[in-house]
Length: 186
Picture (tube, rainbow, N blue to C red):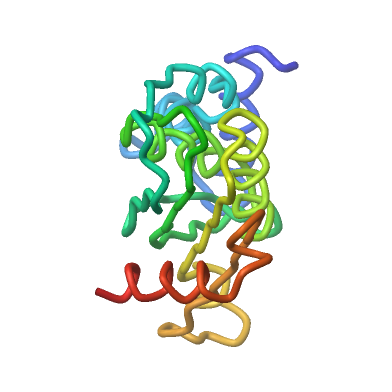
């Protein structure tokens, strides 16, 4: 793993590819600012799903859908290093234990704040919910706009991509899926 100084030097090399004078005032501290921003943008590499989802509570017999919708997220496409962002909807049906709603938002951050593709984020969140909460079912639906589609290539500024992962009763039972979609669309 490169050191922070090696990473800053690499940013300076990339700036030199774009800009003739990397020593001008506006660019002098850019390598440091880029590495600082990357530490935040890619903080998901230092998050652990097991830790996030391990703090649960007695569900007190609740057996309905738990849905947190419209969770805003920002990620970075691993193919072009372009941003993509959107909203995630996460649902599960608890068996005995429930998790605090902030943990659902944090599990999205855990996956989104890495070099990613949308399909992997969707699957990863569903895998973690299934593994650490052991619900009757879980569902993850993500809608996102991708920078690589907006500003380069086909230049489709308004295109949204939707991915989903349905597990347990959300996969097996149409009624559960239908109820979930009704809750999301309300």
